[in-house]
Amino acid sequence: MEIRFKDQSPERIKTDLLTIPVKERGLNEPIIRRLDRYLGGKLSERVKRRNFIGAEGSVLLHPTEGRLPAAHVLLLGMGKEHEIESHFWRRSGAQTRKEAAGIWAEEIAFFLPPTSDLARIAGPLTEGFLLASYQFNKYRSDNKRSFALRALTIVKSGLRANEAADRAVRIARNLTPGVFLARDLINEPPSMTTATYLAEQAKRHCRGPRISVEIWDKKKIQAMKLAGLLAVNRGSQEEPRFIIIRYRPVGRPKKKTALIGKGVTFDSGGLSLKTSKSMETMKLDMAGAAAIIGAMSVLPVLRLPIEVTGYIPSTDNLPSGSAQKPGDIIRYLNGKTVEVLNTDAEGRLILADALALAAREKPDCMVNLATLTGACMVALGTQVAGIFGNDRPLVDTLIRCGREAGEDLWELPLVKEYREDIKSSVADIKNIGSSHGGAITAALFLQEFVAQIPWAHLDIAGPAFAEKDILTCPKGGTGFGVLTLLNFLSSL
Image (tube, rainbow, N blue to C red; front, side):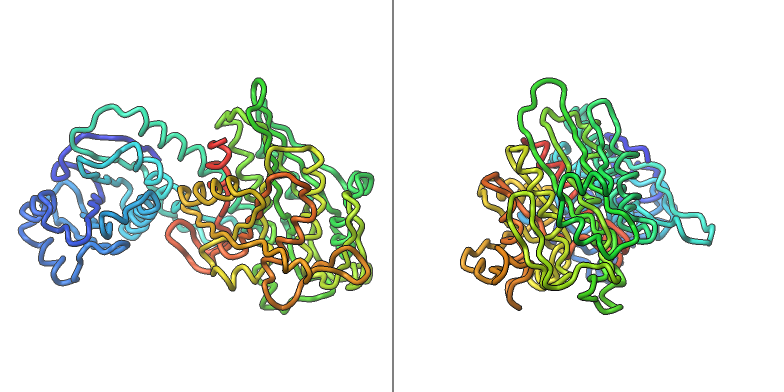
C-alpha cells in the first residue's frame, strides 16, 4: 500500500473514500458545512436521520453520487476533544479500512484538521490501516479475490514537508511485519507448529548482520539441565526445543535486556486433562513465544543501540504413559525444587528454566510474556493484559509503552503473603496455589527464578487471541505484545 501526504481541500480530492474525523457535537465545522453544500444538503439530512453526533467509534458513510470527486464520504466520530489520544487514530485507521473494504474502495484519503499534529497522528493512523489489513487465508479452498487497498493519502491543508511524519510512517511500516509474523505463528494448526517448526521459523525470520539464532535440541537441553522443559515434554512424541535469539548492536550496547516467551505449542493439560472445549484454541499457548520472535525479527531494521536476548522454551503438553504426573518433583538450575500438583500449570515450569538461565547472564532487566492463567482473564477480560514486576520504573515504562502501542496493561500486585499458598510439604514450592488469586500466585512462582534482577511478567492470556473479529485484527492470534516490546526497547 502506497502512503503519501498531500495539501488539498477535501472537496477537490479524487478518491474512492474520503474520511473526515468529526468531534462530538462538531458537525457545524466549516469543512462539514462546505461538503454538505456540494452534496445539496443530502449529508446533513443523513446525519439527522441517523442521529449521528460524532460519538467516538461511530461512523456515517455517504455516497456522493458524482457531486464530489470523492465517490464516498465517511464521517468518523472522534468523541470529546479532551479524550482524543493516539489509540483513537490507530482505531480510526482500522475503522476506515474496514469501511473501505465494505465498498471495495482501493484508494482512501484521510483528512486531518489544519491544527492537528501530523507527526503525532501519522504513525498510529498508518499502524491502524496496516494492522487491519491482516488475513490468514492459507488453508481456505476458495479463490475469491480479497480486498487490497492500493493507496492511502493523508490530507491536511497547509501541509509542508514533515520529516517527523515521514519517519513515523516508516516506523509503522517496519513494526507491523513483526505483528503479522506473531499472528501467523499463532494461527497455524498445532500439528504444524511443533517446537521444531517454531525454532525453524525463528531462524528463518530473525536474520541480519547483528542477529543470530541458536537452537538447542533435546540432547543439549538435557546437558544444560533444563528440567522443567524436559518434564513437560515427557508426554509428547515431539522433541522440545530451546530457542535463543541474540541481537547485538554495533559498538558497546547501552543496555542489556532479556525477553522470555512461553512456547507451549499445544496445551491439552497433560494428565490434568482440559475439557475438549477448553482445548479448542490451545494452539494460542505459544503466543508469548510468537511475540518474542515477532519483535526480535524487526530489531535489525530498527538498529537499536542495545543488546537483546530472547529465550524461548518450547514443547507441547500432552498426556501419555510417559507424561509427568501430579506429585513429581523438578530440580531447577538455581537449586529450587518444585512439586508438580497440576500438569496443566505447565507454562510456569518451562518459563522457570528460561528465567533462571537468563538471570545467569545478569541483564539490566528481564521481561517475560506468557498466556499463563485463566485467572488473569477473569480479572481483566480479553482486552487487557496483567503486568507484575519487582521494579517500579520498569513496570511504569512498560505500561506507558503498551498504552502508546494500543496494548493495555494493568498492574496486579505481587502479594508477599500469598507465597504461603505455593509452599510445598515435600519441595521448596509447588506449581499451583489455592483456588483464589491464581494470576498472582503464578507470578510469585516465576519470581523465585529471577534472582535480584529487575523483572516484569506480562500475563497475556486474554488479549493474545481474539474470539471474534476486532477492528485491528480478524478472529485468531492478535500478536499482542510485539508493539509494546518494540516501544519499550526503543525507549531504553
